[in-house]
Every structure is written in C-alpha cells, then in structure tokens.
Image 1 (cartoon, rainbow, N blue to C red):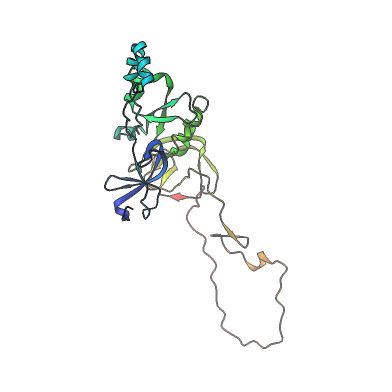
Image 2 (image 1 turned 30 degrees about the vertical axis):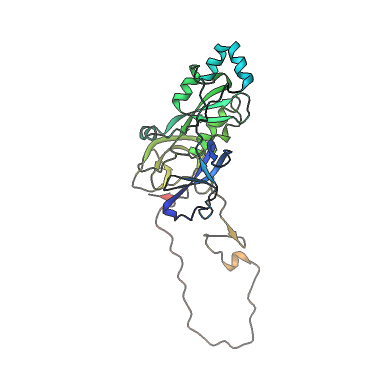
Length: 302
C-alpha cells in the first residue's frame, strides 16, 4: 500500500472515460483520482487510501494475423492483410488549452465515437482527428465518427459548455459522459473582462431578479453590472439564482426585528398591584436612517 501523502504532495482531479485504466487489470477507469508529486495516479479521492494505481492507456502490441487460421486467410488475401496490419490503435489524448486560448476564452476539443458502441467516446489529439478525417490507412477510420466541440474557458463555463453538448445531442447522444466536468480548464481570472452582454437566463441579482444588459467580470468579485468596471457602487451578479433568504420563526435572518405591536397587535400589558420602585428610564435612541442611496440590485460591490 502506498503511504499517505501530505496535501502539498498531491492533487485531486477527475478523469474522463478513456483517460485511465487500472494498472493491474487494465480495466477502464474514470472519475476522481489523485495525482502525486512523483507523477503517479491512484483511483479515488482519499489520500489515506492510495491502493489502486491507475495509468494512462498505451498502445497494445499489434498481434493481428498471428493465429493459424488467420495466417491461411492472409495467404489468400494478402492485400487486405497488409492494409489491416498497418492500422495502429487510437490513443486517448486530452487537449490542454494554451495561453492564447485563454485570451480568446474558448478553444476546440476533438473526439471520436465508435459507430457500434453507444458509449464509445474518446478524446483525441488534432493529429489523430485529421488522420481519421483524411481516411489515413494507419487508422481504422470506418469504425469511427468524428466530432469537435467549442469549449469555454471564461465566464459561466458550466452553462455554456452544457449548451454546446446539448446542441450535439442528436448526432452524439451521451456526449456528456466524455465531457462530464463542465468547468474543466476554467482559469481564475487575473484581469477584468469588459464589454460583455446577456439577454437573460444567465445572471441574477442577489434578490433573485433576472439581469439583462451589459456586464463585466471582475477577477475578485465575478460578474458585475455595467460594461466596464468603475469606482462607484455597482451590483454584483450571480450565475445561479440565489436561494431564498433563510428564516427563523418567521423572521428573515438579517432583517430588522419587528416590534411587539407588529407581532401581537391585540396584546396589552395588564397593571399589577405590586409597588414598583421608580427607576431611571433607559433612553433607546431612534435608529438613524442611512444617508447612502440603497442598492437597487442587492449585492453591492465596488
């Protein structure tokens, strides 16, 4: 069993189908995995249980034509044998975005699907994709369908990438199995992205109202109202509709506590026969109304 790794020595990631196989059994593996600083990979997300090592699949030896019956067939069909013997295995390849892709905010990913398998998706390199498109004799192109997807890297990437997968649902059903991590490769912004716009269904105020119009993405605050970032107050926006404010005993948390007259208007305190010693009254000052203009959207930010 591999020993426990301190957090600085590993990263937890998520593998897509076709990216890894179990080292001992060669069985396909996808889902959470741990990458150690030493370059090894283990199934799962518990650094205390580094048991099942996984590896990236490699091309298997081409043993085509090694049996006795096939050898006889090859004598009679030497041309067909020669063509199939040159075919190489398709190797999975995860395309990593480059710095220029991040500047554009998106890039193209390439994939294949076996025509006789429902879930036979595999992400491939641009080179392999071109070889299948061009029907190169070194790849078994008749058994694959080719596809590409535009992958967003900035903004509300989960919604945008989900929409891209949805648009291909007729030709490539179950494509979400291959691209299951919708925010994969999203980069934390270190600059303000300005002059963006939404027509609705994408951004919301803190109070749940839908926002339509120009917006920008601040590296620390996320999306905000307005095409450009300014020093004055302007609202923070949210990619998902915020949940309703939690309540306790019918009073919204964070709201002003109601008075006794508001809670129980019919209640009146009855006089008692007890003698009450006079005391110095405690004066509670009236709340001072704020002088600042209230935010129209809720999530104010600068």
